Length: 489
Image (cartoon, rainbow, N blue to C red; front, side):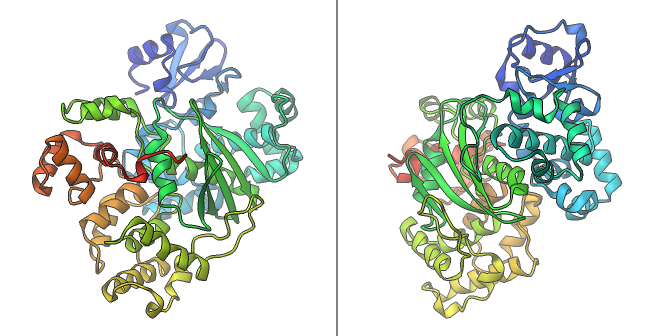
């Protein structure tokens, strides 16, 4: 969008928050870059130039605005509605792959050369993988400086910097303040008072309807791994350097996020996974406008706009849980999962109590005796085949997955039909166009609204909802009185 100068200028002059994260405004006279909704007086159009990413602004020598803090804006929704190599690379960088494995590791996961990855990212984002990772490290450093009392040396290495000098230079260059000056500017509200606990805000584009989002996560929560407590969804996280616990509370203009991490180097990954699970980078206006064009869906959208797709923090975990939930009730699926967790999950300490385990990793599940599983023999075969392939990397499900290729691999497994594959594509892989025409709840909702209720006819009608059919699923499910559709009391 950053190449459409006239549209960008209009968005800046109207301070339209819907475009935050879509592009960034760099002011030539002040050498500052802002989000479109910056509260400052808009600069003259001839003094504006536009970039597709904060990293591109920083690479061009602009520093972040101290008022609107553009580095904290929601991510561009483009990367969550695409499955091409650039979108997959952006998701991997957000998951910390460049910091852990370098650019060669990023390229290897995508099946391209480092030169090809750098060229494609530069073309679309104005910055290469190292610059994008550097921008993420700067934002992580800022969070740690402002929300913890940690010494600067510990913050530098936790944020992924290789040296104190690089940390100091980057913070000064990006924010025009030294690390100590950044800390002096933080609000005196006791932030960071609890050792090991980080409290931050996760921004999103309005509107956001939390009912089905948190309702789904709470209603399907696996005891020991997830819970709903005091208005917050809490769950354990398996992270690259250790483990963590996230507590997420819906607020009118943000999601309050409280993270307890065993290793602070996992902070950017934990934030990225929480944002992905709650679908916070979605563009609800674009989604709802497309679905509202169908006169039979319009009343549902108008009644409760801004529904998100509840996703996951661990794609392999969700695939296993999808198999456990085949042809059984939500309660039965939770029971199956909780037994596996108690027997094979790694234990964690929760300072608040309630959470006891990480969901078992594929390696642990591959060692499970099939005869110990209280399910039909055919589903045991489905379960063991899935976890074996996940464990030996024959099948890989992750943020970098190609949606169509993953669908084909899953369909080739015994016991995997279209419903199981598409629910994994929708909630684990993040395909915004995944659709479930054979789902009983969808067919019942379609019949009640006057939509075609047979899978073939409903699929044909749903072609007009593309590329947002996964969101249409949320609106159709919401016509039912199931607990997944209601924010827990």
